[in-house]
Length: 220
Length: 124
View (tube, rainbow over the protein chains, first blue to last red):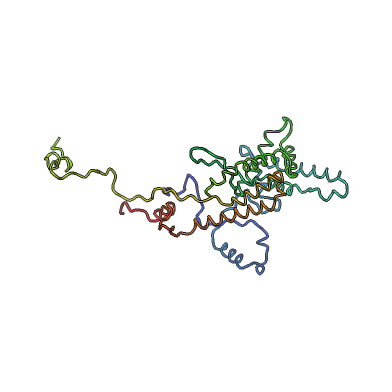
């Protein structure tokens, strides 16, 4: 229970439930008034009256910001060193672009269109390829624990993909290889559906398939 | 020390009144008799696992195509649809505040209601 006997609370503060989330999308504000639909008009009118929370520093309205990339950078960050993590991410994207451009210029004319050069698209597609489709959860029944195949939520899938990617890059690399290079290598491999992370995903799927008899132990 | 004041049951016991018929109450409450603001957790009826057919179809497809995701895209899409539908159904079921066929509410819902209207223990 929150005891509000002080003037300023010391432990943690929480916004009043009436505060609304900030809208960072610039395009919504640049639309003229007539083009908005009914519910959007209502929402804007409500926002003019209700108080709004402060936007967190990670969220930005620039064209270069991407929520998935920021999440990945945060997961790569160690000891709060966001500067280092962000620079590593930028170097990774640059490395991907360089490798793809090299391939592009070496390829013959008819294959040039199939090569993808945009590092953001490669990142998103690689993450999507790494996401597992079902996971295993330990359920205890009759004293024994079984690994039951269970559908995963979207957040969990994204988290698992990113976690596998980062642990793979941290552990299985040569002494002298830097993180951006290794990461770009892994991302390109995942983009082409090959490599150790895709293998890990397949191993998980195989285990789920082997345990499919226990699927009835789920109660949700 | 002045004449010690014993509780009433002690004097009654000493006077031998209980040997005949009257006995004191067996339970002597240690805490005040006040209703708590929560009920004990009751084990709800376990539901069944959903989307098993879709999952088995997807796994059969995987076995045929060597766990290739692009080859089984249709089955995977059906599995995701089934999962989303089951999740939505579950949320709707939990959201409605109706009594179950036996006339009960789940213990969590009862606790939420009781928290809104707690027992008054003191008057100000």
